[in-house]
Amino acid sequence: MEARLTLEDGRTFPCRSFTGPGEASGEVVFNTSMTGYQEVLTDPSYSGQMVTMTYPLVGNYGVNADDVESARIQVAAFLVKEYQPFHSNFRATQSLADYLKGQGVLGVEGLDTRALTRHIRNGGAMRAIISTKDLDPESLKRRANQIPSMVGMDLARDVSTRRTYRWTGGQPEILDDDTRMDTTIWRQRGDRPAVVAIDFGLKYNIGRCLERAGFEVLVVPATTDASAIMAMAPDGLFLSNGPGDPEPVVYGIETTRELLGRLPIFGICLGNQILGLALGGRTYKLKFGHRGANQPVKNLDTGRVEITSQNHGFAVDMESLGRDAVEVTHINLNDNTVEGIRHRRLPAFAVQYHPEASPGPHDAAYLFDQFRSMMKIA
Image (cartoon, rainbow, N blue to C red; front, top):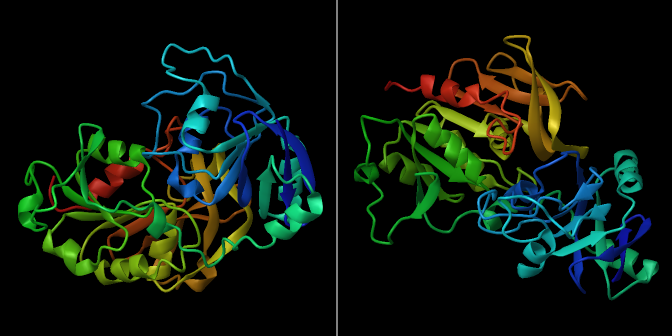
């Protein structure tokens, strides 16, 4: 089915839908991963975005019920060069097309993803609209320019869990409404460090990695305040990844600021930006972001280079943070942006990339053990 993708600057790309008729809009970004498209589709950090894969053939191994990072598809649309309808993998339970159609998400192929990626690299991530119904470039351009900008948009509130849940046995376990949110909530107190994870768009594999590192994990909504967290008396606080601009997430920033020095804190992705803002810094939007499973990051403590998985469009401005209180621990070797920060006196650190990367790489998995070492219990 014929379709058109039109960016806010008027650049138009012909393509065709492999999921039937429909329209979608949002910010267009690209991901350089060669595999892991199901993890990309279900990553809450992609909320409000249409994702194009730079790898040219997508869909060849189908999808399954296990390789998800949230309860549903999060992307606004999925853009590929060539869709493979005949999947082949012993774990597959359905095709990519059926998976997208089942959740009402538009998928298109036959799009010149190389040209689109080059255009975004030159002009920056842009708002766009894709349609099988309206094929007029001028009409699509006007509509694309009416889409709200990602800057100033609080999407974390939209993707966060509405109910508190445990992470146990590799799965979320929703708590009953009458559960007491105090120190009695922990089942393994004394055996495992108790961690409250604030869900700004938490990926499931973060829960798996925290549990694997020996924590008892309780996931709470993004708007949970500091007093509610301290009522449970956890041993540590985790700040999750998430979508959108970090600066409008004022509730998360204020909660983090109140808990600095009271709990050990570890943040990932949006959690890194929220920690930076809580420490008095600023953030800014990157030209086209970092999205892929092959981003080189240098650990300034060890001098080692880690190949990392990333998905973010904003970064911490280190010049806005006092160097006497906060230090840079990691930098991106492609553009020298900040990839990790640490407070010099308080037990708080964060990284901009994803050490829990699923399907990989796993060069930075040591950070979960580093978090545990900050806590008072063994």
